[in-house]
Amino acid sequence: MIEFEPDRIAAESGAEIAAGGTGGERWPIRAAIDSRAVEPGDLFVGINGVHSDGGEFADAALADGAWGVLVEPGHAVRLREAQDDRGAGTSSGWIFSASDPAAALQRLARAWRRELGCPLVGITGSTGKTSVKDISRAILPLRVHASPQNFNTEIGVPLALLAAPRETELLVMEMAMRGLGQIEELCQIAEPDVAAITNIGPVHLELLGTIEAIAAAKAEILTGLGDRGRAVLPEDAEALKPHLHDALTTFTFGAGGDVFAERTEVGPTSVKALIGTPHGEAEFEFPFTEQHNLANALCAVAIGVALDLEPAAMAERTSRIEFSRLRGERVRLQGGIMLLNDCYNANPISMRAALDHLASQTDAGRRIAILGGMAELGPTGPGYHDEVASLLRERGIGPVIGVGDLARDYSPDEWVATPDEAADFAARELREGDVVLIKGSRSVGLELVADRLRIDLGEEPA
Image 1 (tube, helix red, strand yellow):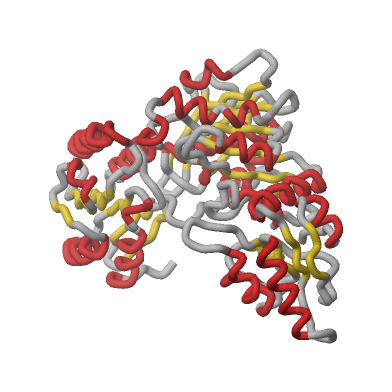
Image 2 (tube, one colour; image 1 turned 45 degrees about the horizontal axis):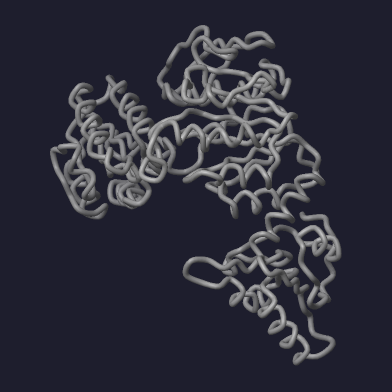
């Protein structure tokens, strides 16, 4: 619920009221930019995209019960005239006019974030952002509102903020980056109190060129803290050291850091860890077995420490952890086949972590990998794919099914051009006891393989 009345929405967003609404609600429930997803009570924001002008769909949003719309002046005039033609006595939504609806959305989100007045955690990094967010949402003993799915851009973050209810005690926002200046822009909207960087690695090299440039782009979140905030950083992130300064309060995680695993015990479905922190130690039991997710959990615990939360209170809440779809999902298929669905995205860091986890499944039958290429690595891409090919051989993983042109560089046992072909091949070849990992850059579309296998082979009852 965005508890701003129309005059304040206009003032905070820098918009003008072009026409008053006649609905009964004082304020909108949330903001939306997709007219197909508009629900009664929403504020629809018509943003100009690459392929469409969102303002053209404002009529449909109002017809579906939108509380109001925020559009460019030309659309506002058109909509107001349409309301006038319908005459008095007809239900209508508020119409706001702004020269740049996207910027107006961002200003409105910042105003609502300030209105809530609670701490905000911004999470960025080359990998693990969503998992750290998911774990933080579960274990931090506060009323947490976290960004859903991949709402981590200059549009997604404002939408996530505007969906936060009044009773929120902590905001946790994922922040994505593909170039310099983007994290800085997100910080101007969200104004984080705690900044967490999960790691620095070779992601988006095609755009930024070097690890040092990637670190500089991620470090914008530290600058976004100003003088008021605290930073959560990996202990081993050498590339971040040039961006640190004495006035910055930091909490490190990982071996040798402020938050670390003193002892771990990996079981069939969980990992137990005694975690040490500056606030004391506590026994945690996490509902996963992947080593990289233990690192993500340490980052989430460090976020809690930066917020002055007690480790024991966090440890009590680990059963609440649920990961977002397509990120390390474990799906048991008929015939005792285990599907590891980690196809949301891929880069050299996350690919190595996923393959290490697959290799650790020593009690299973064959360890099979269906791999798409890793995009946005630029001229260094073939080398990184060759490194994965070497890792596959070292770990005894196979057969390996490569999907798409970039995947040829894995030297796979079987290469196919499309996810459909990969699903057909896998459905024929998988047998009892196999563990199969599906992973690749999102552009490859490997979620289709996972969905097909769930249908073609069937899932075992939970």
